[in-house]
Every structure is written in C-alpha cells, then in structure tokens.
Length: 470
Image (cartoon, rainbow, N blue to C red; front, side, top):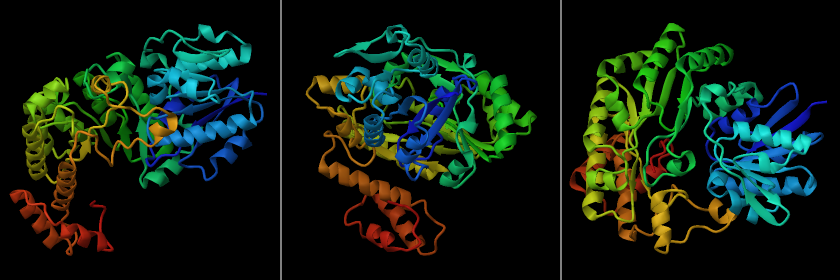
C-alpha cells in the first residue's frame, strides 16, 4: 500500500493555485506515494478532510506565508498533531525560510522547517521519515535533536529544468476557476531574483540567484495543460518573468506557433521592459500579453536609489509609453511611508501617480504603506534602531501589510493618502451614469489637491451597484 503524503494550504483571501505544494508533491514518486492536497480556501472542513486521509500517512506538509495565513496554519497543524502525535509535521514556505529555527522553538507541534526551494528537500525528508535516515544529512532544513533545534547547511538552488513538471491533477483545477470567476491557470516558470531591492526579502532567500524553465519545455507543458483544462488566461507567478528578453520572445513565438489562444499576465521590471526591443512588444501582444505589473515604489529617483532598485524613473516612463502604444494594461504599485522618505519624495510619488493614471485608462497605480518585511535590508536597519517586529507566530499572523501604515506615517499623511487613493480610483470609473458626476468631482479634486470633507466617499458607499472603489 502506498504511503500518503498530506499537504495543506492555509486559508487566505486570494485564490491562486497552491503552486508550492504542487511542486513538492510532483517531485515525489507516484508509484510509492499518494499525495493529497487539502486547500483551506477550497475545503469547507479542512480538518475533516485531512482526517479522512490520515490513515497510513507518512507526514503532513504545510506551506506558510508570513501574515494572516499563519493563524490557520498554526491551528490546523496543532490540532492535527494532537490527534496524530507520531506523524511528522513539516512547515515550509516564505515564513520558515526567514524564521526556520524560531518556528521550531515556538511551535512544538512542528517537527521540521524547510528553507528555500522545497522540491528536493521535501523528497529527501520523506525518504528520511520512511527509512529512518538521519535528518542531519538533509540540507535546507531545521529540525529537533532532543531539546536542541539544529539548522543544517542551506541547499543550493536547483535548475528549474532539472525538476519534474508540475502535476496539476493533484488539485481540482475547475474549483479554482470557479473561485477566481474565470478560467485562469497559475504557473511559475522561474525561481529567484538577481536584484537587491532593500525593502524585499528575495535577496536574503534566493541570494540573488535565478533559474528558469527553458522555453521549449515550458511551451510543451503549457500546451498540454491548455488541451486538458481549456483555460483562457495564464497568471505567471514568477518574481521577475522578463529577466531574459530572448527567452520571452521564444515563449511568445511558441504560444503563437502552438495555437495557445490565451491572455497572460506577468511581472516586469522597468529596466527589463526597456531592454526588450520595441518591435517585440507587438509579438508579445499577439501571443496574448494583456497585463504587466511594474513595481515603481517611488516617484523620486533619490528614493529609488536608496531602495537599491537599480532603475531609473525614465525607464518607468518609457515602459508606460510602450504599454500604452501597444494596449497593454499595467499595474504600477507605489509604496509610501519609508523611514527616510522626505516630503519632496512623497510629493514626487503623488505627482507621478497622477500622471500615470491620466496617461491611460488601462493603468492602475495602487499605493501601499511600507511595513518592515522580515529578511529585507531596511528591516534589519530599522530593527537595529529600535523597531520591534512581531515576536510570535500569532503576532505575525496579525501583521497587516495592506490596510495599515507603519510608524513613519503621521495620522495627517495617512488620511491624505487614503483620500487620494479613493479619488484617484473614482476618477477612472466612468461606466455608471450615477458615478459620472462624482467622477468629475474626483478629477477636480485631483487637479487642485483638495481632499477635505470627502462626502463623495459616503455617497459612493451607499450606492447599491457600486464597484469596489474604497
């Protein structure tokens, strides 16, 4: 009888396919192991579903993202361990890549934590659990040796072409289409990132290394998935999809040659966007490119340099020009509230957001507040100066990266940003007849920087057929 490997994806507000669990599950020998993925976002009773498959189980693996999903990961793992005390519980993902030892020191129900790429590490762990091979021989983990927590040497990044294809049959793909309200497939074609942005944890986790699936293999995989699942959209989850222009061109040509008729979206750095020959943009659009995400972070070159973005403002504008010309939608995220942000830097960001928003109705300019993410250089700096990060797993689960600001944003500035975000979004909504007058008011407010007494927000919230504007 095959041993069962249970994998759990915690509850969250987004419905991306559990690519990390699919990757480690696909790396296991299907002749020896039965992989069962339970997704807390899909399952109505996750613990019951896990319990249903608990007989003959070799281990429970849980993916952990810093933030709200940690609470569910904590509670489900703890309850599972109480019922099955001899079954190893393994945590992996972003949180354990940053806090491998700390996780085990706090959570007695977690036996092993994985750091970095998990495919080969998890495969070796499963073999160790089955054969009693010493955990000291498995790279890229933290584990317990009596009362001590041991951290093994890291595992070197594995070439993506050396890993097996992801087996999407391990999940019920149509259920994710239903949750997303469209037939969108999530796919990751590379891992890692070469860059050194000081607000990001990638340089710590990936050590500025990068590996990508070859275009030929990628097209073969996507073509087979397209025939099987008939999806209409692909969301590439790569950190930096457009790293190599020749690779991207080959992928686009492959989509066209294999008649893969889908739209697709991916991340793009501004410097990568300008390195792509402009004539190739037409090819990308023909292949289905509909949207890119270009992280701007700041409208100030001085602030960009402080963030170690290694990008010039002019490159952002050139990408914007090209995307407008070729009808590509763009999300340009900005971040405000950095510790060293001056009023001039803040004003430059607001001005750039206005200009990008006015440039095309297909451009979105969301604003986020800087919150120290573990593993980043800025976080190391602010903690050295007295900033207190959350201490426990449950504290980290309450850490809000989206809806609240850090201590470097005054109440006055926070109110300004929230009102600006509302009116900037309202200024783009023109479909509803009811919203047209409000749209004009929003445009006037933006042109005059007048955001006091925001009565329009109250009105919009009362409209029954409002779109989510605030």
